[in-house]
Length: 393
Image (tube, rainbow, N blue to C red; front, side):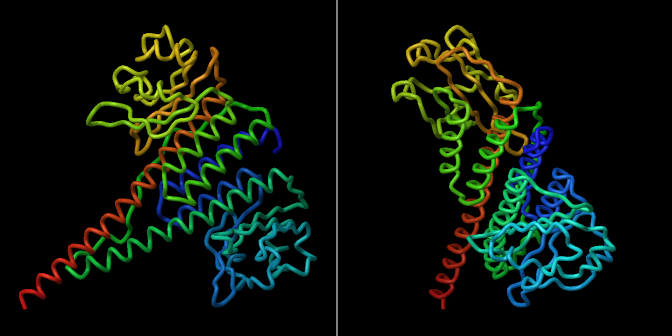
């Protein structure tokens, strides 16, 4: 990635994923994805089209900076419009005016389009559409830029699958409820989640690329499974690998007991994990106000609940980060180091982004489970009512 662009790519990828996880509106997700990609890559325009299996046409799902006249130029055929993309290949057409794979070359000249980067949108190992970036001048794209656009296209494909899951469950629940005269709202809304902006200081390009790949892996896993524990365990593995700390843990708030319950950890001994309950009011409680907290001395700092156990475990410093969902702190992500450890601003920003994705994964899974529970509850209720009516007859 070009050095001055690394921060923007990271922020763009994070912003797009926030939109994906916080909205069940597929139209909004794809619109934001195209807009952010165009801006980050400095392209003239962009579009995302989905394949219509029956007509084999590429139907417009979202676009940015393309004129209505150009968008209305006519249908795009998946067999005639850069067809290699439908085979899963990334294709760069440097001169769209003279390339035989391009439909509507005259219209592209009038629109001021010269170079086209086409990236497949894949869902469940099947190409379902194409994300395209348009440049007004001849342009090359670096391997890192193509990786970035491909990652966003992949997120788009996963978002489509994810939204379809909710849509299918919503339709099934709606049909059941209508049997007893209850109508659902037209749109089943997901959690409204607009978190702190992900801001990063300029960072070494190689480290920035590593951060991007970690966020990509986490986001891909979240969208590929509704098992939040699987996501969290993978997330902890990634944090340990990239930050090279002794251990990492994730705890969730239990409002009833006022304790922080362990969900997953790695690198901590059994005896340390069994040291006793971790109380919200006694264990680095500032984190629960939404603030990352660095404890340089995990043995002498009064904000530590179990200093002697930290000493026996060989823990010198602790970084405690809030996990936020729905504008509420629902848990904490903690990193433990064997030596006194400082963290740079970009490291804290990156880890905060990872913690936010963890919160989104948890809420995403809970929302789906609630939908499944609603479906099961009403199905069982209706079966009971049907059986009771049959007995009365």
